Length: 281
Ligand code: NDP
Image (cartoon, rainbow, N blue to C red; front, side):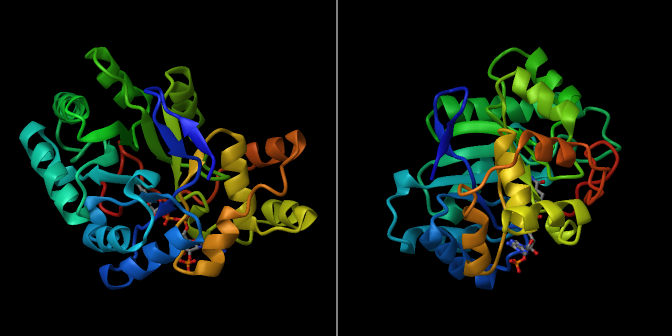
């Protein structure tokens, strides 16, 4: 698995495996399959309610802990300095780990009615920085943070997030947020990199996929990689897990990249951190 170097020097696998909506009872098997086909980065969250199963898969997979890269996230009810500290320990215990590779603030605003989100985010970020300084987590970051949310953290001084996880796929490229991250050495990772299947029949992507004799998901993932964005596809099938890793025997031309980058906005989940209550993920 190729890696990218984060701003603090930590190497992060260039592609990861997401476990949102994998039920607890299936998750140990699915994550075990993902690790055996070659994934080393597993992306979970306390809100997915499958951390314990991820932990069992890690314990039973036979791959040394230091070769894995485990991410989890503090959810909206877990925000606050003391709350997040407790949540971090709970996640660590659920996963059966002594350290995490990456810990993220899941959403910038727990509740759209709360006007003190800037202060709250800053307190959670203080907590993450402390966990990082104590060596309990190798990298810290955010998820669903747009430039104004990131600017709020930056204004406090201290560390900037090393990673920001965003919804990112053809048809929803969040260019302003991605550009801000690039300018500030924040690695972008892509949630729903396949548009949660909503892109499967897109005519442009289908045409490009046919030209390369690959599938539409492979085009979506290759597009992210060529833009320096780290995709986190989810699949419950070992065949599709393998397909989603098979991205290095073709490349997209500049023209194809431009076609995809300029396609109409489509396949958006509808989840916006300033407009929607974060209930889905
Ligand atoms: P994806 O874009 O990864 O799409 C997953 C869907 O695509 C599943 O239905 C899967 O079906 C299908 N699929 C996967 N590979 C293929 C393939 N090769 N061919 C056909 N169908 C395929 O969506 P997710 O929303 O799951 O996002 C991925 C990860 O991102 C999550 O699991 C989670 O870790 C993270 N995430 C983070 C969020 C955040 O707020 N930070 C929000 C949402 C997701 P099947 O399982 O049957 O293969």
